Image: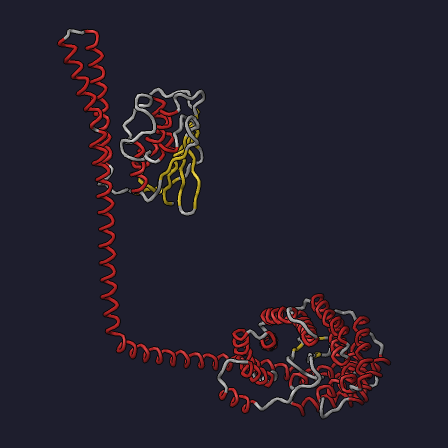
Length: 625
C-alpha cells in the first residue's frame, strides 16, 4: 500500500494454530516521497539550526526513516518537531508530530495509553482545520485510533472510529485509500468475531482493488479472507482465495505476504486432508521465513506444521516440529530478555555519562561564575543590608509618627474633655458658697449632688484613662480558645448584675487564635454598650455572630436599640466621644476607643453601622484566622 504521513501497527492476535501479524499502512497521498538518506538529512539539519518550517520538514522526513528503525530516534524527532511546530503555530506539523509520537508509543508496547492521547491530540487539530486534505488526515487519525483501541481490546471503540474514517473517505471518493480502510475495518470486525460483517467489507475492498488494478493489495486481502473462510470451514472458498493470493503476490516486492499465502494454503490443504500439498506449502513457508530471517514467523510456521502433522496422524513429525517450535520460542524469549537487559544497561550507562558530564559542566560554570561574581555578590550583600536598614528606619519613623499623632489627639482630648467635669464642679461650688452665705438650705443639697456627679464623672474618666494606658505596653498573648463559651460567660455576668428582659442570641461561634484577655474586654464593652442602648426598646434584642471572610474571622454585635446618626459615626471610636448626650445615656466615651485599640493590636479592624436614630446598630470587627 502507499504510505504518507504515518505508519501504524495492529497488535498480534493469536488463533488456535496461527499468529497473525497485521501491519496497517494508512495513506493520505498517492505515493510516498522518496526519503533522503538519514546521513544527508542529519547533515541538512546541522546546517539549518533555525526553528522554522524548513527544519520541521527535515525532522519529519528523518522521522519517517526511523519508522522501521530506531524507536528512540523516532521519538526524538517527534518531540523536537512538536516543540518547533508549537512555537511557529503550524497545525500540520503539530498533527504530524503527534502521529509520530503515537507510532513510537505503539512500538514501545507498554505506552498504548500515551499513543491514544497523542492520536486524540492529532484528531483535535485535524477537526479544527478546513479543506479536503485535512478531511483525509482526519480519516487517517480515526483509523489509527481504531488500531490503538484494538490493542487495548476495546473492540467497540475500534469499530466506531474505523467506521468514521470510512464515512469520510466515502464522501471524498478516494478509491484506493477507501479500499485500504474497508480492509482495515474488515480486519477489526474479524477480531470482534463478526466474520460475516468482516467479509462484507473485505468484498467491498476487493472490488475497489480490482477496479484500481492493485493486484498485490487484492492478493493480501484474499489471504485474510481465506483465514475467515477457514475458520468457518468453508474450505472451497478458502482454497480459492488463498490460491489467488499465492498466484498474484509478487514475492520480490511482498515477501511477507507470499509467506503468509503459503502458510494459509498449507492450513487449508491440511483441513482438506491433502497432507502432501499441505506439507509442500508449509515447507515453502518455513524456508521463506528462514530466508527472510523472521524468527517469530518461523516459530509460528513450526507450530502450524506440527498441527498439520497431528491432523494427518504423523505423530513423530508433529512432535519434531513441536519441539522445534518450543526451542524457537525459548530462544526468542531469551533474546528478548537479553535485549531488555542490554537496553537497560545501555540506558543506565548513557544516563550515568550524562550525569557525570552535567556535573563537570556545572562545576566548571560554578568556578567561572564565582570568579566573575565575587564583587557583585559583595555589592549585592551591601545593598541588601542598606535596604534592610532603610526599611527598618522608615518603619520606625512611621510608627513614631503614628504614636506622635495618637499622643497629640489624646492630649487634645484630655485637655478638653477632662476640663468639663472640673468646670462643672467649680461652678456648682460657687453656687454652694452663695447658698451657704445666704443660708438657702434647700438648694445646698442640690449643689452638693451636682458637685458629686461632676466628681464621679471625672473619676470614671480617670479610670478609663488608666484602662487605656494599661492596654498599651503589653503585646498580645495568642492562644486558641472557643469564643462561644467566652461570650456566654460575659452574658451570664451581666445577668447576675440584674440585666433581664433582653433576648440574647450567640450561636456557632468558632474557636480562634487571639489574646483571650483582650477579646474579653472587647466583647465586654460591646455587649455592655448594646445593653445600655437597648433599655428604651420595647423588645430588646442583642445578637453575636461570626463568619469567615477570606483570611479573617468577622464578628458582629448587633442590637435593636437607639442607633446613631451618620454624623456621629465619624467620631464614634475616638477617645471621650459619645454618640448621645451623657444625661440620657451616661458614659465616658472610652469603651469603643478601647475596643478599636485592642482589635488593631491583634491585626484586625473595627467599624460601626446604623440606619439612623431608633434603628439599632451593628459593630463589626475582624481578627486574623
